[in-house]
Length: 108
Image (cartoon, rainbow, N blue to C red; front, top):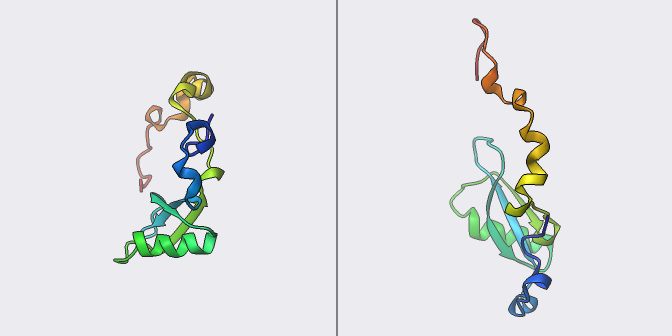
């Protein structure tokens, strides 16, 4: 697993002169889950929140904003696909397509 925005491994010297990168997640007005909207540069969490508001929610697209330092995100890579996901792939009974909903049960 690797950090997607680790500038030390990419050798990107220009990234070292920029403010830290923050990932922005917005929650739409109807209460749906937060979704990744993009990224902003900022020196503090408060500044990142304000920048995210100014860039991503000018038209009332969100009722809640989360900002997370990009360096705090750890993600799997496509190369991890086999070994990382294998334990879950051998349990098909966890997927709902194997169950039938009984009559009279409301599905939401």
